[in-house]
Length: 384
Image (cartoon, rainbow, N blue to C red; front, side):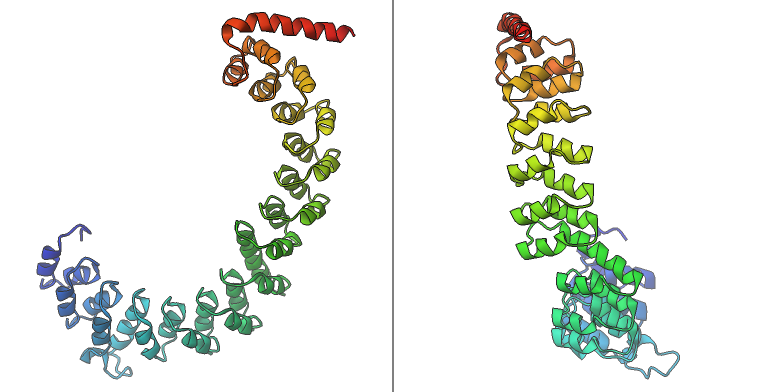
């Protein structure tokens, strides 16, 4: 059925002789309440089931569906599964209020599991169901983000690894519990902890205590995320700058919060990628940038674009054969005008474009003269 079907058409179709049509009307959220009310009394179980799942159904309608004569048959009767079907549908409805969920009880584990997973289930019911004999019910409690932390703690030693893994995946599970579950004997639980900690590490509003806890994690990806975090402390940065994993040190070197003394200490790191990050960080000292500018690889390019690089180094790099290095110098706001004038006349179009967009670059009509003067001064300096 077309979701754009007008309400007046849905009203008419609610009386259609075709059962399938009435089912589609019953599940449509735009169906008028008067039509849904009538369908609550429908003799067909699947029509009533559709209404029971409809978020537009009122609490009174849900109560009526549960109390329907056909839904009250003896469940031992092989023809009477109506009550179970309607109860499941009501539990699946995201708008079912807490008072109905609290009253709804069944020996059917599927229904109880649905109550355990429902966002409107009262806290006291969640606490009771956390001790349910059925593993499916307990698993839903462990997954439910509304389950209180103290209830999750009470389930943390559950005999089922599925339950413990679900606790590890629950977004409301605190780091303290994840640390405990990280040492679980089950690989499944450990993997769930790893996934959750990586999600935690992506949060921007972590406290210093949470950052320190994650900075000590066994997973280098988690430590790396902490090394680049905006709320990390200087002490933790200092500790992670000596981490055994190069990706963690790389994150420290790239963090704009990392102090100069830590960056200068990392300028001699064994990892080339770490040194590249140091070369690009504006907090790195001019002295270390000068040293890094004499090394190979992409390092000169990073030094060339660093606003803390001394002018004399930028001048030197403007004569590099590698066009990407010259381009980085052309983009640097600290590059002297003479060097920019030279780069504005560069043989490479990308270098010329970068120089033309630099606000310090002199007008093009002055560039030739300034470039000649700059090159002459450069040549004279080489003779000294």
